[in-house]
Length: 314
Image (tube, rainbow, N blue to C red; front, side):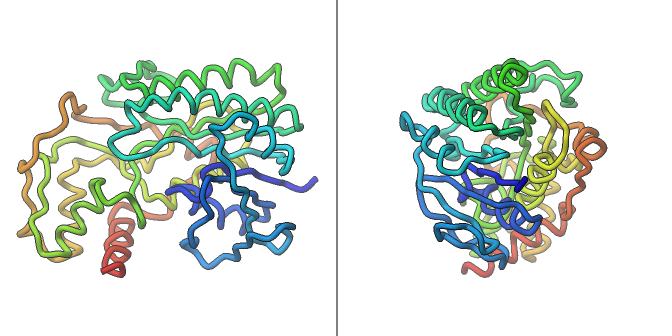
């Protein structure tokens, strides 16, 4: 039986990296979104044709928040597998956006339509914000789930509902909890592009104190981890992270060294967000040992890839 995957949010930050990997691994790939796909970051064939049989990706224009669209999409594709990445990810807004509720409802409609069409395995994008952030070490099996934001609560509620109905619906469900990612084409207001673009312009990079410890993973590796999770037999949650937790100041130091302007870094020039946890360190044992995924980029090579991309945009 052909492996046919439906990827929602295929044109998003993670999705555009996942599509060429799925094509390269022999999947029949269908991507859905509100807008046409942007150019992919790797030179794999991309097709918006009707048959999707040339080794490319078939795109389906679809607004999953609209009633009936999920059922129409699934009926058109009849996927065996689902990779659901679509959600509100607008920087600074998604934490409290009321449409988190709409995305829970839309995701449940999509899941039921997928199950009714005979789909067998679904992988969903979760978030590290499901965890209790008073714990410095975050483990899928040991750390309490006490989300503090509407976004985290919505994701966690969806996961609970999907796992509770996996048996009755006959669908394997895996849940990838994303930590902190970066990469080419990231929203300019986020940490890595904000620092890089300031330094490349010869302007001071205004930062917080930088003592917060975080795990950063290149978006291409995040996408690769989701593809590996889709192809594995693991069910339940898995942390999507690099396993390398460092202070933000270390990330900034690497960036300033690559650009060659450490003199422009201004640690402490901005206040840290209220309640910002001092350390969030994910356990990546399940990702490494059960899913079998290891990242291609280490932090230094991944950040250099970002700097090179932002240079090319100037």
